[in-house]
Amino acid sequence: MQAIRIHETGGPEMLSYETAATPEPKTGEVRVKVVATGVNFVETYQRRGWNPVQLPFIPGAEFSGVVDALGEGVTDFSTGDRVATANGSGGYAEYALAPANKLVPVPAGVKLEQAAALMLQGMTAHYLALSTFPIKEGDTALVHAGAGGVGQLLVQIVKMRGARVITTVSTEEKASLAREAGADEVILYCQADFETETKRLTDGKGVDVVYDSVGKTTFMKGFDCLRPRGMMVFYGWSSGPVDPVDTLTLTRKGSLFLTRPTLAHHTLTRDEVVWRSGDLFKWVADGQLRLRIDQTFPLQEACAAHQYMEERKTKGKVLLLA
Image (tube, rainbow, N blue to C red; front, side, top):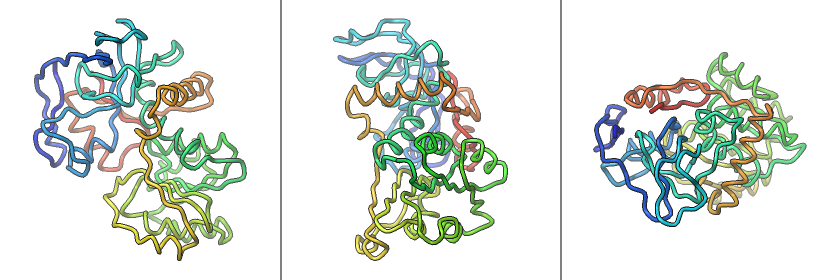
């Protein structure tokens, strides 16, 4: 099979398109003939060495496709089934493996490309708004990068739950996308200081929660956007890693809460995977949740896909098509 493999950490040029052995499913695993693979910032972190992985390495945890082979003990799936996962391995390839208990069937009303676009970013937005900080009616949330893949979905889900959304974006084009997603106020952070604007928009009170996937350039200022006992949800670092935080900082700034959640810890059980993906598939099929696929790249152009992501050009989901 053809695959993208990383032999050394570094820039996008480290993504090598080459022939690799087709993986064999072990007990409890399913092999999937990949149709679409989600491109996510976590793979750029792995490629750079920020999230260390054992090399050589085929990235890609989020993909959709058709069941091709079953490992011993798998009874819930059959060859030919349309499936998707956010917890697989080696998705930057023509064939990839996933644990059967982390694989979900894709309903007829959802395209495989949509499923690949939903699994990681959609379930991330789902756990952020329903579990990490369970949004309730009347809350106010600051969502950084509201025009990105997770951002647009998170804005919509937070709005569905009756909260007010303030978001940050870099351009007027992205501001329009954030407004289309339902953001109540949009801050162009290149033109205005988001901390000052957030305080102004909340009459100095601050927001209940900050959802920060940007990291280095936004993290510390985000604490000053929170109300007393508010929560900083730090779930990504597209601008780079952040410095350690002295816990006394949380005290001084208002007895704040800080969490660094991951999707893995919010999909620990089969029930969680089915619940989160089921909600998302239903919302998309019913038209409640708009999914924007921004760009698709052939598998062999994974380098270009990573460059596009890291140049902060994304306005939705980026996919590789096998």
